[in-house]
Image 1: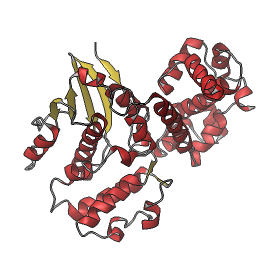
Image 2 (image 1 turned 30 degrees about the vertical axis):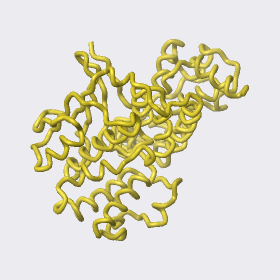
Image 3 (image 1 turned 90 degrees about the vertical axis):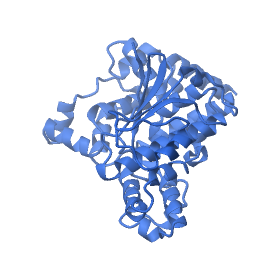
Length: 356
């Protein structure tokens, strides 16, 4: 039976930093394309691109991508490959440092999947252990068709470059497959990936020997890793601060009295009625905002769970009740899905850090 690793995000439409947009603007500049042309229609300025704390929505980066493809795509057919190789581990900020300091490549990949919304990807990866192989599917179904090939190649080559940075050498691939016809630069991709890709397949994927995942990373550091994990968690919380209809729904899911409140969260029908709209309309508006009732409920429960585990003596069972779970086991399963650890282990780690 295959074991699957999925991300918390199911689509590319999540907020992100400006480093990726800045990288593409810089690449275009090397080929004679002005930043004004690259930023046309985005509302971004050169100054914004130099702000490490600036945050943009994915559609703004998508506009930069479209400007790049329009400007250079016809002259540089391997544009996605060339741009993808520019993404280094340092491009990703604290997210990248967390990967570098992970104990093994496998743990770095697990972390990256858990915090994928701190990356710049548009193609969503899903990994599986199948028949003694580790398969990373690179899903492009929701990527806009006009830039799909560029983004598949950019994201795959960026993943490959990041793994190269982590290991200190290129990862050994068993296979690489792509869902489009063989391009004229197939030999270039073969030289980079170390294996000749198969084209015209049903999926985009990379395949590695699972033993590769056990390789220790040369810059692994337990203390740095723990610090980076904490900072990434806080960054995700800040980025998930929402506006508009999502913020209105989220506010109605927080128990009155905050973490001390004890109440079953209202269902979507109740929330819709409170907002004077039909359930169908609410669902549609949340989809338009890139989220859902379930995702928002998870966010609220996740934030409150960490608050109660860190700041109260409540037992795990009591916290489960306050979050509206019928059983502690269901809460424990959800918490592990959110954080990769159990509530008890999370509390122990917080106590240990506080006592240092």
